Length: 468
Image (cartoon, rainbow, N blue to C red; front, side):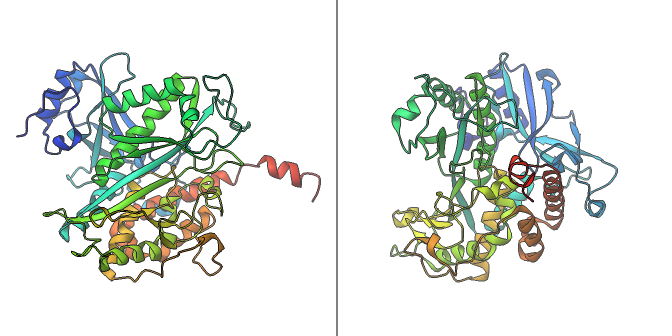
């Protein structure tokens, strides 16, 4: 048994083999009185229960209805008769089992509180195969079976906006310490970041208390748009950190009288927000980067990984751009990709290869939106690269110019409805991610799309009311 370290903020890496006894010691050391038991659903929303510390025991057998995994972003169960063939229509319970390695304090709580992510299991002990964490674990296991370890590093963009309680009103940049809101582009401006120093001091304090390993903070192109970079590591660990980070940013922003949003395109006339994910693959034993040959040149597997992304990303866009709003980001000349071309140090492509030495050679998937569920998006992207290496898919020639000006490039889907339909055309991906997962996910997204289509927008009233 691995003992829990005595340090106040034990690195997550050292917790990989923690038992429930280790977790209990960690809770006792911090005098935790309350536990948030969390389960990420398909949309990335934190579901679960809050328990007093003395009720949080290994033999408690905490349960939740399995339907909570497949709720739409509006909190509804999809109205799809095909779901009866994919999931029990009795709304049975699933058993929740805490992952001790995910334990974090809740630094903004008044009383000593912890949050712990739980995995979901059926009554017979089998993992709930359509739970997002399970899906990502299954994809990582595919790499392990080949003697590989995938490594990722997300870069997450988000907007700070003025508090908005009326959804009919457009979002606006927040007021900074100068008493003014941003009205011009402040890309990489240090002074623009300093406008929100009190907020970011809290964010860094919260992230440090939660061992989230955030790296750099920058001001992005949009008014009030920021980006946080994470240090590279295990995909499941990083997905957990992004999941926690989104909760943290929203909470910190509200405490400073503003909102933080991860919508892909929250404001008209401003760039969208992405979750760029750097990806590489190393040998499990030697930690050698398999994207590089011994002489430092790019390996065949490097190009096959790119080839897999190029072939399959258009078909898995529903996992990377999961909402109607997501597709407003993917337009030319807005720092967002419109196709799956690849290029070295080229930000106009969907698949960028950053400058690096041979040991750190990696691929950056720039297609994923900030609104994507991190577990689902990482699973889908890694699955595409894995298929590329297993099927030895050749990458297209490198794009050395502006990819927006390429008329014959394979375009990305332009809408959620198109993306959901394309899921039916990739049985290879469905086999890796799970047919039930893909079926339930598709039902959730089509239900959300149907809900969106019931809403009449201001544009329609303005331009169609008296003119058609």
